[in-house]
Length: 436
Length: 181
Image (cartoon, rainbow over the protein chains, first blue to last red):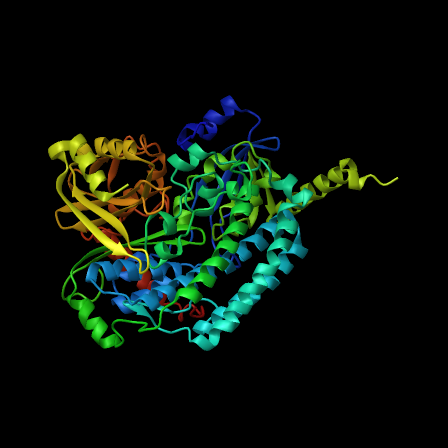
């Protein structure tokens, strides 16, 4: 097992100068107006190799938990929805579970099936979005545009069912706000058939492409032991061989009926290596799994009510009387989301609200992933855990009095040049590349 | 793993140190009914590390989050653990509640047993003004380096000043000619 280092102070610049006099400090980030998330990486590099990394988040802290304690519980759902724009149903799904547990509200079966369907449709679109981002970081922009083109139908479908492409405003305490009427089933089934027909293409484009394999195999490795002690979640943990999935481990909604299993590369007959390639494998497997789950939901979904408390005024009155605490967990596309809430009687706002998003847990696993990687691999390793990424605005090289700014484009250029180099080397050596 | 087994194993290892344990079992599912368990218990800070070690011996251990609140004279922390991932329906949520007085807000760090807890411990330092003894990295993580207030504390005059300042600064945006976002 690689040593898991936790003492960034120990690798302070002074000590580094002694142990690694040729190390350069390379800060990347934090922000650009166009980016979704700002985060600062500081790399200490020797030549092309990363010796040490330090990561400083916090540039996007919006104080949402503090704001949440100033709002009533129904308003809170729509605030929770805006924690993440991509997995925008995951936070409300965890929040409604927490409040339902605290206030003792029942949820009708049909509503639970609808929650599962929306959650799984979201997983499909989120994983496709990630696949596009990964292709872009590697320099395959044609693939980026192709993947994002085929992502559109699932967003259209979500718009058709819920009214919105993102921020669906579907969960409410005690159920969901909109039904999926049987007239819409054929449309859903058509979309699922369309995605099923694309699976072979995806496997060819991503997993059988020699240059993608060369750029991602044995890059950004997170071993099984590291993933376990650092509490990695979601596809990041599963790609390292841990069968860890809230849908499987901790029953909620109708997932126990649907017999969901945590998928690892072993399910595709591959050896687990815990690298970026494995993370692609797991996400592709999960797209197929989500298609199967939705198909099964459509078959098994019972008729009936979609909410146990249809009137919002009655719901608010009931919630105002509620006292207690509750936990809600959900497996978002990126991993475990957990909400803890504490309610007191005669108070409309929650007394305590604590939110944990998947990237929060996948923050620590980044450290071992970056060690001994090349600078050109920074974008794909950073993107491989699927953070709400795009922090690579610029690189600031600082060494003594010399300062130099390298923009994001240059970092991407480095990454693309590496792909080109790798591809041409492959073409020279591969049997199909030798012409004449 | 069943919640009852976790409770019995913890009782055996910790004895009276595990105070007022409360077991909640819920039934989930429609066609296949499955049970899921929650264990809530209180613990003294001196016994925290022992409890985490005991949990780690029980099965694969995951820390979801540490939640915290200012409850008057004391600060309350809840460690939300999940024990036993990897098997269908095998996970049990173990929630350990811990209170520390505000004049001595020191809690032992559990990073030596579970390094993945570092992020959430660092967050508690800056948000609640706690100290974790033996934590490998106590720097700020989400808040600005120069902010001395602790946003979740209810007794901090610096914080209310900071909030007033921010609100006033926002209100003056029009005067400065900046468009409202």
